[in-house]
Length: 290
Image (cartoon, rainbow, N blue to C red; front, side, top):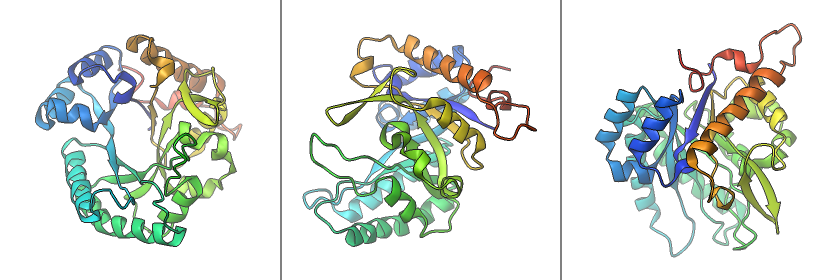
Protein backbone atom coordinates (compact mmCIF):
# COMPACT_ATOMS: atom_id res chain seq x y z
CA UNK A 1 0.00 0.00 0.00
CA UNK A 2 1.45 3.35 -1.06
CA UNK A 3 1.62 6.00 1.64
CA UNK A 4 1.92 9.77 1.34
CA UNK A 5 3.81 11.51 4.12
CA UNK A 6 5.11 15.02 4.86
CA UNK A 7 8.58 15.65 6.24
CA UNK A 8 8.79 18.05 9.19
CA UNK A 9 11.40 20.16 7.41
CA UNK A 10 8.46 21.39 5.32
CA UNK A 11 7.04 23.04 8.46
CA UNK A 12 10.38 23.90 10.02
CA UNK A 13 9.18 26.66 12.39
CA UNK A 14 6.12 24.78 13.63
CA UNK A 15 6.33 22.79 16.85
CA UNK A 16 5.75 19.05 17.05
CA UNK A 17 2.28 19.68 18.46
CA UNK A 18 1.41 22.10 15.64
CA UNK A 19 2.58 19.58 13.04
CA UNK A 20 0.62 16.71 14.53
CA UNK A 21 -2.56 18.74 14.98
CA UNK A 22 -2.52 20.17 11.46
CA UNK A 23 -1.67 16.86 9.82
CA UNK A 24 -4.39 15.00 11.72
CA UNK A 25 -7.00 17.65 10.93
CA UNK A 26 -6.14 17.44 7.21
CA UNK A 27 -6.08 13.66 6.85
CA UNK A 28 -2.30 13.32 6.61
CA UNK A 29 -1.59 10.22 8.67
CA UNK A 30 2.16 9.88 8.22
CA UNK A 31 5.09 12.14 9.09
CA UNK A 32 8.84 12.26 8.45
CA UNK A 33 10.32 13.16 11.82
CA UNK A 34 13.05 15.75 12.33
CA UNK A 35 15.62 14.81 14.96
CA UNK A 36 15.70 18.41 16.20
CA UNK A 37 11.93 18.52 16.73
CA UNK A 38 11.95 15.16 18.50
CA UNK A 39 14.81 16.34 20.74
CA UNK A 40 12.94 19.55 21.57
CA UNK A 41 9.62 17.84 22.30
CA UNK A 42 10.96 14.63 23.85
CA UNK A 43 10.79 11.05 22.58
CA UNK A 44 8.09 9.85 24.98
CA UNK A 45 5.87 12.89 24.41
CA UNK A 46 6.32 12.48 20.64
CA UNK A 47 5.25 8.83 20.80
CA UNK A 48 2.20 9.68 22.89
CA UNK A 49 1.16 12.61 20.69
CA UNK A 50 1.48 10.73 17.39
CA UNK A 51 -0.34 7.72 18.82
CA UNK A 52 -3.17 9.94 20.07
CA UNK A 53 -3.44 11.65 16.67
CA UNK A 54 -3.23 8.41 14.70
CA UNK A 55 -0.10 9.48 12.81
CA UNK A 56 2.54 6.99 11.68
CA UNK A 57 6.25 7.69 11.10
CA UNK A 58 7.66 7.27 7.60
CA UNK A 59 11.23 8.23 8.52
CA UNK A 60 13.47 9.55 11.27
CA UNK A 61 16.57 11.50 10.51
CA UNK A 62 19.03 12.24 9.59
CA UNK A 63 22.14 10.60 10.96
CA UNK A 64 25.38 11.70 9.29
CA UNK A 65 28.97 10.63 8.98
CA UNK A 66 31.97 12.74 8.15
CA UNK A 67 35.28 11.68 6.65
CA UNK A 68 36.87 15.03 7.47
CA UNK A 69 40.04 14.91 9.57
CA UNK A 70 38.66 17.58 11.93
CA UNK A 71 35.32 15.83 12.36
CA UNK A 72 34.19 13.63 15.26
CA UNK A 73 35.96 10.33 15.71
CA UNK A 74 34.43 7.50 13.71
CA UNK A 75 33.73 5.48 16.87
CA UNK A 76 31.72 8.38 18.29
CA UNK A 77 29.75 8.73 15.07
CA UNK A 78 28.92 5.02 15.08
CA UNK A 79 27.85 5.21 18.73
CA UNK A 80 25.46 8.09 18.01
CA UNK A 81 24.14 6.33 14.90
CA UNK A 82 23.29 3.25 16.93
CA UNK A 83 21.50 5.45 19.43
CA UNK A 84 19.50 6.96 16.57
CA UNK A 85 18.54 3.47 15.37
CA UNK A 86 17.17 2.66 18.80
CA UNK A 87 15.22 5.95 18.88
CA UNK A 88 13.83 5.27 15.40
CA UNK A 89 12.61 1.89 16.66
CA UNK A 90 11.00 3.50 19.72
CA UNK A 91 9.18 5.91 17.42
CA UNK A 92 8.10 3.05 15.11
CA UNK A 93 9.76 4.73 12.13
CA UNK A 94 9.91 2.83 8.86
CA UNK A 95 13.48 3.92 8.22
CA UNK A 96 16.43 5.98 9.44
CA UNK A 97 17.87 8.31 6.80
CA UNK A 98 21.67 8.19 6.57
CA UNK A 99 23.95 10.85 5.06
CA UNK A 100 27.61 10.37 4.25
CA UNK A 101 29.99 13.30 4.57
CA UNK A 102 32.46 14.96 2.27
CA UNK A 103 35.19 13.13 0.43
CA UNK A 104 37.86 14.49 2.77
CA UNK A 105 40.39 14.16 -0.08
CA UNK A 106 40.06 10.38 0.13
CA UNK A 107 40.31 8.15 -2.92
CA UNK A 108 37.12 6.35 -3.86
CA UNK A 109 38.43 3.02 -2.58
CA UNK A 110 39.21 4.53 0.82
CA UNK A 111 35.80 6.25 1.00
CA UNK A 112 34.05 2.97 0.28
CA UNK A 113 36.13 1.14 2.89
CA UNK A 114 35.22 3.81 5.43
CA UNK A 115 31.52 3.55 4.56
CA UNK A 116 31.62 -0.23 4.80
CA UNK A 117 33.19 -0.02 8.25
CA UNK A 118 30.30 2.17 9.33
CA UNK A 119 27.61 -0.02 7.76
CA UNK A 120 29.19 -3.19 9.15
CA UNK A 121 28.93 -1.61 12.61
CA UNK A 122 25.38 -0.25 12.48
CA UNK A 123 23.53 -2.64 10.16
CA UNK A 124 23.33 -5.49 12.72
CA UNK A 125 21.80 -3.04 15.22
CA UNK A 126 19.28 -1.90 12.61
CA UNK A 127 18.37 -5.51 11.81
CA UNK A 128 17.96 -6.29 15.50
CA UNK A 129 15.56 -3.37 15.96
CA UNK A 130 13.72 -3.83 12.65
CA UNK A 131 14.80 -0.46 11.24
CA UNK A 132 15.71 0.08 7.60
CA UNK A 133 18.81 2.18 6.95
CA UNK A 134 18.11 4.44 3.97
CA UNK A 135 21.26 6.02 2.54
CA UNK A 136 20.49 9.30 0.80
CA UNK A 137 22.66 10.18 -2.22
CA UNK A 138 23.70 13.85 -2.22
CA UNK A 139 24.93 15.95 -5.11
CA UNK A 140 28.05 18.08 -5.13
CA UNK A 141 27.66 21.56 -3.67
CA UNK A 142 29.28 23.90 -6.22
CA UNK A 143 29.29 26.82 -3.78
CA UNK A 144 31.49 25.08 -1.23
CA UNK A 145 33.22 22.95 -3.89
CA UNK A 146 32.52 19.98 -1.64
CA UNK A 147 31.89 16.59 -3.18
CA UNK A 148 29.90 14.11 -1.12
CA UNK A 149 31.16 10.61 -0.59
CA UNK A 150 28.37 8.78 -2.30
CA UNK A 151 26.45 10.22 -5.18
CA UNK A 152 23.58 8.44 -6.94
CA UNK A 153 25.60 5.77 -8.74
CA UNK A 154 28.08 5.30 -5.87
CA UNK A 155 25.22 4.72 -3.43
CA UNK A 156 23.85 1.87 -5.53
CA UNK A 157 27.34 0.41 -5.78
CA UNK A 158 27.69 0.58 -2.00
CA UNK A 159 24.40 -1.12 -1.08
CA UNK A 160 24.95 -3.80 -3.74
CA UNK A 161 27.67 -5.17 -1.43
CA UNK A 162 25.02 -6.25 1.07
CA UNK A 163 22.11 -8.65 0.88
CA UNK A 164 20.26 -7.29 3.90
CA UNK A 165 16.66 -6.15 3.42
CA UNK A 166 17.37 -3.50 6.08
CA UNK A 167 19.79 -1.52 3.90
CA UNK A 168 18.68 0.55 0.93
CA UNK A 169 18.23 4.08 -0.36
CA UNK A 170 16.13 7.17 0.23
CA UNK A 171 15.97 9.20 -2.98
CA UNK A 172 15.43 12.94 -2.54
CA UNK A 173 14.27 14.36 -5.88
CA UNK A 174 16.31 17.53 -5.22
CA UNK A 175 19.55 15.57 -5.16
CA UNK A 176 18.77 12.84 -7.69
CA UNK A 177 16.81 14.97 -10.17
CA UNK A 178 15.85 13.41 -13.46
CA UNK A 179 19.02 11.30 -13.42
CA UNK A 180 16.72 8.74 -11.82
CA UNK A 181 15.74 7.54 -15.28
CA UNK A 182 19.34 6.79 -16.27
CA UNK A 183 19.55 4.05 -13.65
CA UNK A 184 18.62 0.43 -14.41
CA UNK A 185 15.11 -0.21 -13.08
CA UNK A 186 16.12 -3.49 -11.47
CA UNK A 187 18.61 -1.66 -9.21
CA UNK A 188 15.94 0.80 -8.14
CA UNK A 189 13.43 -1.96 -7.49
CA UNK A 190 15.93 -3.79 -5.31
CA UNK A 191 17.23 -0.94 -3.20
CA UNK A 192 14.95 2.10 -2.96
CA UNK A 193 12.75 2.24 0.16
CA UNK A 194 11.42 5.77 0.06
CA UNK A 195 11.10 8.80 -2.21
CA UNK A 196 11.30 12.38 -0.91
CA UNK A 197 9.47 14.41 -3.48
CA UNK A 198 9.94 18.07 -4.39
CA UNK A 199 10.27 20.10 -7.55
CA UNK A 200 13.48 22.07 -8.09
CA UNK A 201 15.15 24.65 -10.29
CA UNK A 202 18.85 25.24 -10.99
CA UNK A 203 20.56 28.60 -10.52
CA UNK A 204 24.32 29.11 -10.85
CA UNK A 205 24.84 25.38 -10.68
CA UNK A 206 22.90 24.97 -7.42
CA UNK A 207 19.53 23.31 -6.96
CA UNK A 208 16.68 24.92 -5.04
CA UNK A 209 13.38 23.39 -3.97
CA UNK A 210 10.19 24.89 -5.39
CA UNK A 211 6.50 24.10 -5.75
CA UNK A 212 5.47 21.22 -8.01
CA UNK A 213 5.09 22.37 -11.59
CA UNK A 214 7.45 25.35 -11.22
CA UNK A 215 10.72 23.54 -11.81
CA UNK A 216 12.53 20.89 -13.84
CA UNK A 217 11.28 17.69 -12.19
CA UNK A 218 9.54 15.28 -14.57
CA UNK A 219 6.82 14.73 -12.00
CA UNK A 220 4.61 12.39 -14.04
CA UNK A 221 7.60 10.20 -14.88
CA UNK A 222 8.60 10.11 -11.20
CA UNK A 223 5.10 9.08 -10.17
CA UNK A 224 5.01 6.43 -12.88
CA UNK A 225 8.29 5.05 -11.58
CA UNK A 226 6.88 4.94 -8.05
CA UNK A 227 3.76 3.17 -9.29
CA UNK A 228 5.81 0.49 -11.03
CA UNK A 229 8.33 0.02 -8.22
CA UNK A 230 8.03 -3.16 -6.17
CA UNK A 231 9.89 -1.76 -3.16
CA UNK A 232 8.88 1.89 -2.69
CA UNK A 233 6.03 2.17 -0.20
CA UNK A 234 6.29 5.84 0.79
CA UNK A 235 6.28 9.24 -0.90
CA UNK A 236 7.49 11.86 1.56
CA UNK A 237 6.91 15.49 0.57
CA UNK A 238 9.82 17.75 1.54
CA UNK A 239 9.39 21.41 0.59
CA UNK A 240 11.63 24.01 2.22
CA UNK A 241 14.22 26.65 1.36
CA UNK A 242 14.21 30.25 0.20
CA UNK A 243 11.34 29.73 -2.26
CA UNK A 244 9.08 28.93 0.71
CA UNK A 245 10.31 31.57 3.18
CA UNK A 246 7.20 33.71 2.75
CA UNK A 247 4.66 30.98 2.04
CA UNK A 248 2.30 29.90 4.85
CA UNK A 249 3.05 26.33 5.87
CA UNK A 250 -0.58 25.27 5.71
CA UNK A 251 -0.78 26.47 2.12
CA UNK A 252 2.48 24.74 1.12
CA UNK A 253 1.45 21.42 2.66
CA UNK A 254 -2.12 21.39 1.33
CA UNK A 255 -1.16 22.48 -2.19
CA UNK A 256 1.63 19.90 -2.39
CA UNK A 257 -0.54 17.04 -1.14
CA UNK A 258 -3.38 18.01 -3.48
CA UNK A 259 -1.01 18.28 -6.44
CA UNK A 260 0.32 14.75 -5.90
CA UNK A 261 -3.21 13.43 -5.37
CA UNK A 262 -4.42 14.97 -8.59
CA UNK A 263 -1.47 13.85 -10.69
CA UNK A 264 -1.39 10.35 -9.26
CA UNK A 265 -5.13 9.80 -9.34
CA UNK A 266 -6.11 11.46 -12.61
CA UNK A 267 -3.17 11.53 -14.98
CA UNK A 268 -0.96 8.57 -14.12
CA UNK A 269 -1.92 5.43 -16.00
CA UNK A 270 -0.27 2.04 -15.45
CA UNK A 271 2.18 0.92 -18.10
CA UNK A 272 0.25 -2.31 -18.58
CA UNK A 273 -3.13 -1.36 -20.16
CA UNK A 274 -4.75 -4.42 -18.61
CA UNK A 275 -4.25 -2.81 -15.19
CA UNK A 276 -7.08 -0.36 -14.73
CA UNK A 277 -6.13 1.38 -11.48
CA UNK A 278 -3.84 4.43 -11.33
CA UNK A 279 -1.71 4.70 -8.21
CA UNK A 280 -4.23 7.10 -6.70
CA UNK A 281 -6.55 4.10 -6.44
CA UNK A 282 -4.07 2.19 -4.29
CA UNK A 283 -5.58 4.07 -1.32
CA UNK A 284 -2.51 5.76 0.17
CA UNK A 285 -3.30 5.82 3.88
CA UNK A 286 -1.45 9.11 4.32
CA UNK A 287 -3.76 10.95 1.93
CA UNK A 288 -7.32 9.91 2.52
CA UNK A 289 -9.40 9.70 5.66
CA UNK A 290 -11.52 6.62 6.18
